[in-house]
Length: 199
Image 1 (spheres, rainbow, N blue to C red):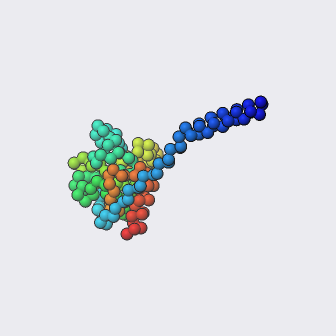
Image 2: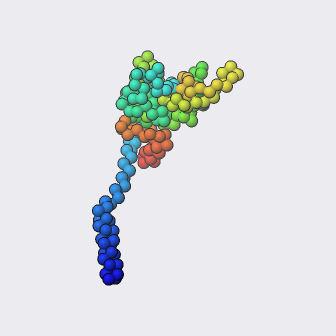
Image 3: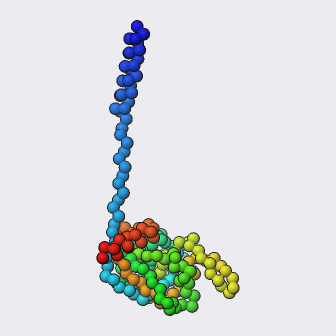
């Protein structure tokens, strides 16, 4: 009797284990990463520009500082604005490298203080119509540098420290769809290097 009872109990336990495993759904498949949009090659050219900086705040942009004129997010890692007279030469989606000459101009040019924040930039915004021959670099509000003013060291935003610098060329390194702008400077640099290596 106890053998029959044990066998019967084992049958019910085994049945419930088997049926519960049948009813359990399989794990969801892992999502594959989306393919990265490549940079396309663009005619190589260098345009002399004056470089300034700005932050994504209403006082320096408009009432919606987080959206650029191109519709892209105002990402201080990679975005730059261009004066309207240069929109034909540097349309939205143009990727540029800013290269300083040995003869920088501008009474308060702080290029050497902020250059490490610049990297490659994607033209995604436009400037006020009063500006000409200019590229405006978007800096994060917490991108701070030390400047010496009248013998005193002050910690100021990179846009303010840059002020206005001449003697810089915007070299075109490629073009990207404005909807596919990378989130980080590292990713943008990787895409630039892949494009240059493929030439």
